[in-house]
Length: 134
Image (cartoon, rainbow, N blue to C red; front, side, top):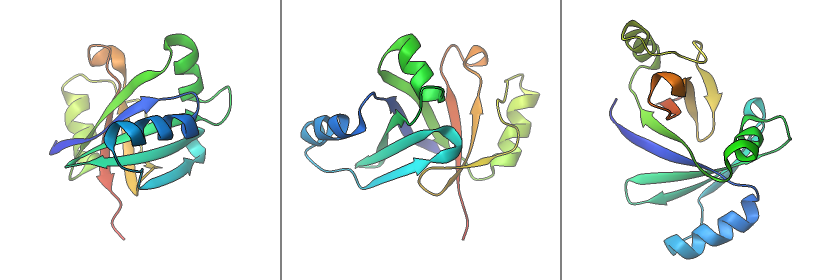
C-alpha cells in the first residue's frame, strides 16, 4: 500500500453536503460521478495530497443508503492506493483478511477497487484502489 487514497463519507444529501464541505475546505469539489454498480453518486474534494469522497445512495437498497439507515452519516471507508490490486488481494487473503469482491471492479475517479470486510479489519471498511491504465 502506497498511501491513503481517500476517505469516504456517507451523506444523505450530496448537494447540501457539497455546500457544507465547500465552506469547510474553502474550495469546490473537482468531480461529481455516478457509480451505477454501487448505487451511489460521489463527489470528490482534493485537500493537499489527500482526497475526500462524499457518497450519496441513489436508491434505498444501495450499500450507502443501508449504511446511513443503520449508522447515520459519517465516515464510511478508508481507501488505500496500491500498484497492483491483484497481488494485494492475494497477499491480504494469505494474511487472513476477508476480501468482499475478489475481482476488482470499476469504481469512481478512474480506479479499480476491491473492499475488505470490516469484520477482518477491526470494524473499518477498507478499499484498495488502483489507477485504471489507459
